[in-house]
Image (cartoon, rainbow, N blue to C red; front, side):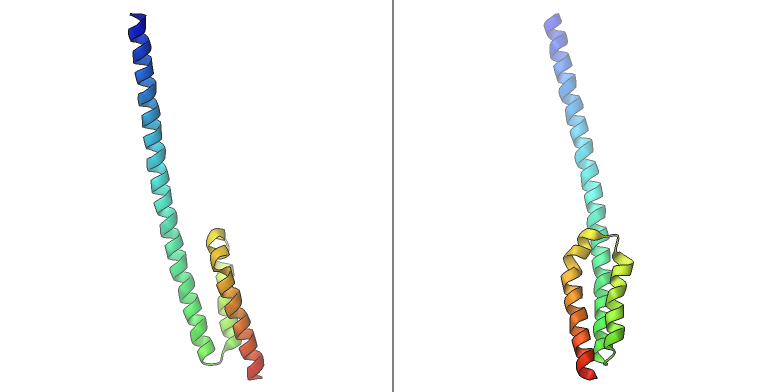
Length: 105
């Protein structure tokens, strides 16, 4: 009789652990998917800013292009992982526009 109770308790504990694990996996999947969607959305918006800056630079508006890129920092500063990834690209473009503006003068 005691042996049966012990087995039932072990089975119940295993079921509880499996249920908690399933809940955690589902939660992580949902939040992970949402985060990926947010990153994709931010990346798309940032790429639009970069394209607009390139268009401005194409017509010689290097200062405006530089400010357009700096707006990315203002609008997306909360998304640190994404900004860390794209920061080098933005900084390189800003330097490029500054050099072109100097050469234009």
